Amino acid sequence: MKSITRAAARLLSGFARSQRGNVALIAGIALPVLLMISAGAIDLHHAAKVKSELQDALDAATLAAARSNYTAAGDIQRVGMASIRANMPQYFKDNPGDVATFTLGSRYQVQATATVQVKTIIANVFLPPYGKLFDDYLPMTASSDVLRASRNVEVAMALDITGSMDGYMNDLKSAAKELVGIVVQGDQTLYTTRVALVPYARGVNVGSYAEAFRGPLKGSTSITGASWAAAAKEISNSSNGTFTASSHGLAVGDAVYVYGFSSSSINRTIQTVSQVPTSSTFKLTGLSSSYSAASGTRRYLRKCVDPQCRMLVTSSGHGLINGGLVKVSGVQGMTQLNGYQTVTPINTNTFAVAIDRNNPPADYVRYGTVQCGWDGCQQRVFYNKSNVLTELPATDCISERPRGSSDPTDKAPGTNAWLGRSYLPSGQTCQPGRYLPLTNVLTGTNGLNTVIDSYQPLGATAGQTGIEMAWYSISPNFGSVLPTASRPNPFNTAETIKAVILMTDGEFNTPYCEGVVSKDAGSGSIGTDYQINCPSTNGDVFTQSVEVCRAMKKQGIVVYTIGFNLGTSKGKTGIDTAYEVMEACATDPKENFFPAATGTDLKEAFKQIGRDITRLRIAR
Image (cartoon, rainbow, N blue to C red):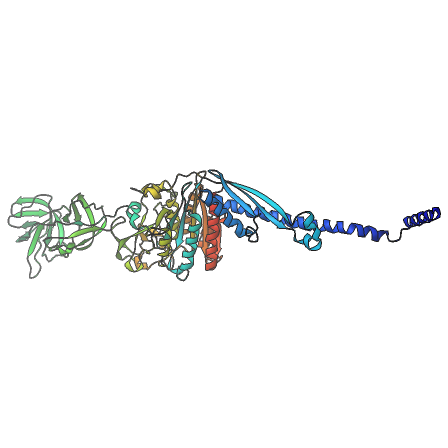
């Protein structure tokens, strides 16, 4: 027995001393552990990746909930869940362990937590016991909170609806409506989100706001009387400067119109009475000769009612200005008064018009109206680029506010501060697309989407008018003339975000002078017959546009610009192309200027701008 025991001991001792097969034995023992560790590492890496995705998705969902105006718990939860499911479509479906909660921690803070169950796929395939020892799922949790901004949002969109947009209007309408949908929130409880529409072509059609913006237009007044001279008196004799006319009724200093003489030096002239020796004789200043009658005629005089022998016209409250061009029509008898005239006011109820000495007026019978023709009247009478007298009617469009070399201003319109008027021919008139001040109404007659859908392409490009009107639409200084619901909030970036979107597809070619397209308008603007013979009041149209943009940006307004189909061409030194205007007007040319070459690009630009504007509302 002892020998057997000793033999066994020697065998075991030898076996222990032997080193053959140790590596295989150790590997065999360690392999399951190594496999479990490796599989676990793969699972943990996968879980960490999912956790990172979950955090990003939860941050985005919390931001979406914060961007909304909702205050009800159910609405906050619904918006957050819709976003997180969209970003993590493989989760938050069937597994009850995938949960996310969005709550309004305070009036302005959205808080969220989320947990997803990450299946340990690798470990269960290669090491089935792993799932039993630990679990088939690893829970990953994330949390997020966003301080909801309490700032209002006011956006004005200056949209190019000129004739060159034909073929792209549906893209523009779709893009504009999508931006409206992003910016304007249904619930306005916490703060207001409003948009103004500023369509422009040859100007901005402000419709019913025209009188408040560019001032009332002066209409015509009735003519109730007119005269120029007393009845004719025959001159029976002229000898050495003394004229004879029975019961002439003249006095020294009277003006007389004389005619019927053979000498052109006196015939059809206006003379001044220098002496009145008798009731039948008189002398005229500077005349000392004898003047015979023209062959087959008689000599006459007419005592003028005015020292300058002008027609004196009675029209109560005419409101005419000295040297102003007017249009007289409908006068019976004194028909020479009808037509375009230059007037001189005598008093509030009387004005004077020079007579044609070769065709002196007949006596007034009845009727007639006088319509002023300068900037501010219902009709505009002016000399065009070819120096031809022209007449145009007023429209409901506005042009740039006249300021000359002064800095741009957004002060409220009023006396000496009206916006520019726009007088246009019927064939090239103001576009039908109308202006809409700040509103959050989407549908109905004055709804944003309804008005956008009504836009049609027509006309040339007065881009400067769209830029100005967009500024005014969100300026509290200008907005005092707007209805209460459309008045902009004060300039205070802590309380209200103000943004302007400028979109154009072509060069600015329609500047104005005194309410009429100026003589330096660009190609494609308007016919030369309808261009006034004076240069743009505010100077170069590109420069004045950029100056308005600079004034906006100084007030903290964020300016976004979209150049549609402009290419990248630039002019000479300075800013002289629409591309350069859009680039210079943008708050940040790299971040806020969007060149767009196609309709798809146009829609994407509006979408990005809408998202950026809503992002600005978030405090953190």
